Length: 533
Ligand SMILES: Cc1ncc(C[n+]2csc(CCOP(=O)(O)OP(=O)(O)O)c2C)c(N)n1
Image 1 (cartoon, rainbow, N blue to C red):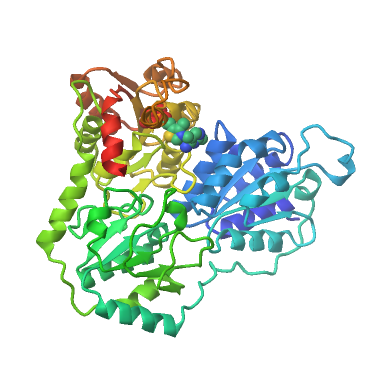
Image 2 (cartoon, rainbow, N blue to C red):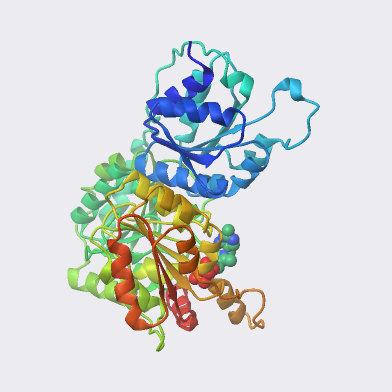
């Protein structure tokens, strides 16, 4: 006989799921862990459900298969909420599996919550598994997770059901649903606009990370010889080494002088969730290529092609009749944008010096994850990324506590790629227990801590608003000592001469290593203003 737990494992394996993440409870999670192992799916024990959710979502981003996180009822579900929010706002297909009470336990209120209700605003779908058609229920939910936009779904299970016999599943595994075909009239209108454009520019966003979309973008840039900007989440879809890649679209001041020169903007897989609070500042007409429509949107495009990005790009490739961009000018714009991130450090180790030292020490094609905070700006603007998903971050949710779980997911999915996690001290404190997960799984990753004993990004805003310093500084912490407590090799860096040897040793290590760098936060203030305006 096949149990429902075994059917669940079989349906996940059929979608290429190879790992699930979580913190189990003592009831049906255990049946699922056992059934999953027999279906070739490893259960990775995380230290918090939040981190497990991020690991699952990042696994989905890297592999294309849905990410799976499993928790116990009650506190397990509520503690996973930030990971579910990541999957929602950073658009990653994810399934949360959590246990609940059987109907005969209705009088029990201990650990009882409306679990689906708590999560509902973030979910693409939810279902409680029963014995009638578990395979069909699971397939339908996974289709929703993989829809447009991708996001989280919730599957509730109970012990009586997962241990029951499962009927045969008839439903075949559907492929990811094909996006809507865009309209001919929209293609004609877009081609007319492009035919008149002399200085078109492209802004590529998170949907462009999908491999066929990224390849089509590169063909478009080569055909048009135009300027291209990427959002943070799309860093690498156009290589940072290509002279056409001017820099990042952050909805800030730094890219404005370059973007204002464009007479037409093509949004390529850009999601409004990537736009910071603030208005759209450009008057040039906008052509939008997107897998799905947005409501609300930060702007009103002149025309939207809603469908497959690569197909839309192919339909527009020959529409530009000649551009006035010349290479020397593009190179100049690119240099000017980069110069804004090259603000000077003081005499102590500063954020720019740390990023540049890490760039010199990193093996080629390393993948980078970066947390939320002031330190993310020098990483995002100075690090050179050549491939889609070469840099991972939380942009839609912009959550702290991302970089280390994200790096663990990267190291597990691609053990031969060196992953480097850049994090602030505040962000690391939210997930430091995951150093134990990295050690236990021998993850090939290095954590670099910008340790300035402060929530510096918030402190900078406090200072700008002329409030006195309060509520943002930490008592100093030694993260090298903490890492060593988990059995993770670690290096404490307090002086410039210690930096390069420590980074070199950490990046060459097999398995995890941590470099705890005491940085001077003063340079951030000028850096933030220079980059964001
Ligand atoms: C979970 C979460 N809590 C709070 C915030 C708000 N926030 C954004 S950046 C930041 C400070 C980050 O401090 P740290 O990790 O030390 O990095 P630094 O700014 O010092 O580089 C805070 C509190 C957030 N983005 N996510």
